[in-house]
Length: 143
Image 1 (spheres, rainbow, N blue to C red):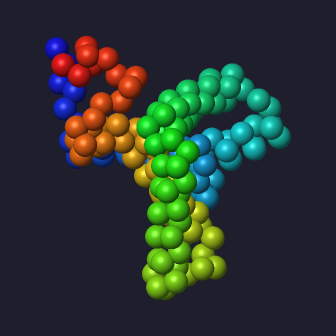
Image 2 (cartoon, rainbow, N blue to C red; image 1 turned 60 degrees about the vertical axis):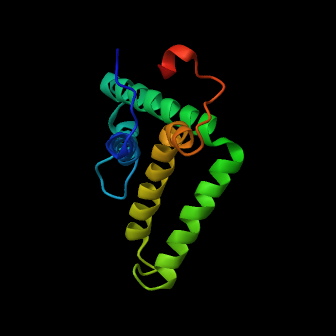
C-alpha cells in the first residue's frame, strides 16, 4: 500500500513542479516556451513545439483543476489577495523597486507557483487542520 502521508516535503515537491511549469511556460528571459513559440511562428512551427505545448497544457490542466477544486473561487480570491498584498508590501517597503519589471515579473511568477502548489496541497492541509475529508475522496484513498 502506498504511503499517502502529507508533509512539508510533499508540499515542496508540488512547489518545485509548479515553479518548473510556470517558468518553462513563461519568464522574462529568452528561455521559455513562450519565446520559443514566438520565434517558431517566424521561422516555422515544428512537431517538437506542438508536443512540448501539449505536455505543458497537460501540466497546467492538472494544476489548475486541482487548485480550483481545492480552493474554490473564494479561496482563489483570498490566495491572490494575500500574495498580491504581500507583493505590494515588498514594493512599498523598498525591497524591490517598482520600476524593475523583470524583478516584479519573477516575483509574480513565483507567487503564481505558490498559489498552484497550495491548491495542489490544500485538501491535505485542510484534512490535517480540521480532520474533515473532501467529498470527492473515497474510503480507499484514505486508508
